[in-house]
Length: 573
Image 1 (cartoon, rainbow, N blue to C red):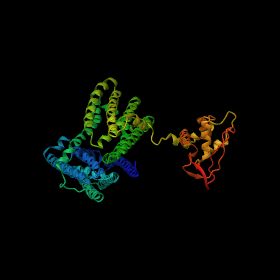
Image 2: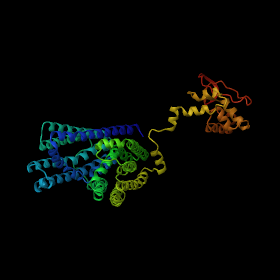
Image 3: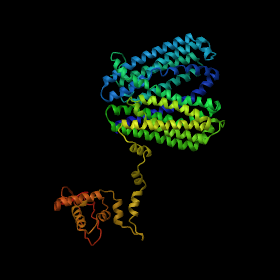
Image 4: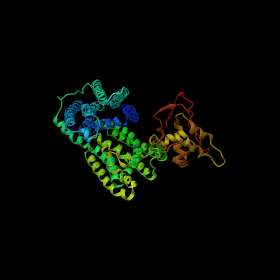
């Protein structure tokens, strides 16, 4: 992995971490602020009206995501003209869809009696004004994904994330100002929408500054290009559908079989265990762009390394979080719920196991998303989550909430078995090698650990201490030596002669002189081929030759103090 890629990943992870933390701060601070300034009634009215745009958030039909991946692949191949063609083709389609959605919302709010359907107490004129303003916000929201593609494809993912998060923080600041100034619903909707429009405009100018070749327009739009990304774009819709079945569908099954009180009990425990998914989403978002760039440039080795490291990080984050939550979970749960709900250890343990298993495929499936080869996966995911609802409907009346958790576990085991082989095939990886890497904790290096703790050196010294407590000081000095070992030519000749005459065994020579078997084998091979001319290829530092007497026992022939050149022929190991 090059230093450039490493730096981009570090910046991407830092940006994702900042985004997750700031989002949590905004979520926790918004509710009490609304309740303090508006009260429960008015906040409830705003909450219902502000959720209307979320129903149209997926109306781009996945074209922004598919276009972003295709643009990254083409830029990595050096085809910026093709990336511009993809960008403008997707922009034309998404803009047309956004305009139709906005006009539909403006028409429906004037035609349908929303205040009766949603049981709102606000005046009809105020409801129409708020929804109309939020409809314009939907139009610009759908453009935000395309603007983000400009950052993604040209290696500025971290900058795009930070700018997007700065825009959200600015919107939150505007919200605080409006609420503290006692502004109404119309004022808040207008202020937030204008802030988002301004943020998108400034972001587009920044994209043009970073990537001058990326121009908004329709002159390079192409119907064939649009057709090529239609299939992966529509397939992206399968993942939010599958997530909805897994989240809202399961709670519906529990309500149908056990009652609404069990829905609250299960939802709170599952929400606590799913907190780690924010970290996993940060990993997948950061690694997605680099995987696309690696594939686009044809660097399969880099893609394989990124995939392994992402899965390893996701798995061990889930394991560490689950272990910590297994012990601290009861205290956190009782503190969070105010002891209003009982804690069920077996259910909690099953849900933590679901988190660990799901971390494997939820990180690995990014591999398929990064190359727009997720069409079959999306269909399988929707089918499997639908089948899990049927399984939960059968198991929940028999086993209670543990049966519901078991159905989720079966789903994630199946998805892991389906996703991992296909992702590994894309990066030419094997399951045993991948499993060995992922199951090894990050930053764990046995050799480095031995060096840090001194275990290897301690073992090498103590294994030569006899029962009387005597240690050869010469051996101990060799083991602790930091200077390079230099072997004189005469020493090499004498060791090879001892072996060929049968006076010493190779293992004995290696043990006495602290040599590796491969080094001694190389000396013997050169001695056999060259005879008396062996070991004369290099000039080395003059070292006082030591004659080895076969009757005198092992004698050290390694010296490193003298550094004056000499005409003596020596060789280095």
